[in-house]
Length: 159
Image (cartoon, rainbow, N blue to C red; front, side):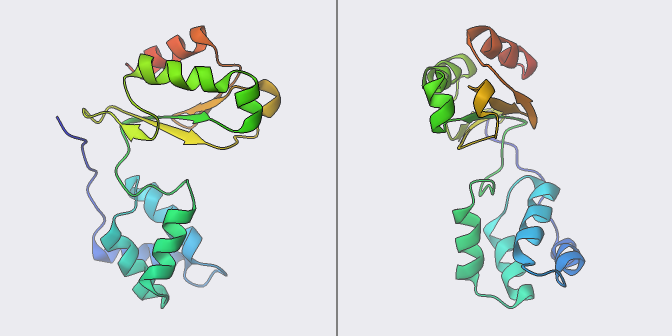
């Protein structure tokens, strides 16, 4: 089974999102965040429409989408586990936790399982450095990750 793609926004929906943020300074970022919140990722066609509406080049919009790690260019899984791979979490065993997570969850870092159930993403600081290794599981922070914590995550996401 392949990853299930959410219904992409219509051109009118994209226009409404742009209109809601167009008068803000630096409107591109709020527009992209709102668009991704709507469907979970940023299709190239939608980014092109946003660029046109904001009167910027497609290259500029594409550059922003590819620069920021929070923007997705493909649909995420139904559950998203984001593991911190920054130095502080690495120093507290984060690399071993990440490798164990890949094995236990059945997905490589930066990938979505073929069944569309789970995405495992690296992040480079969640601001929980003193209590790492840490993760976000469907947006909820989890700290002091170890083997037991990974098992709890796996059960929570149905892996």
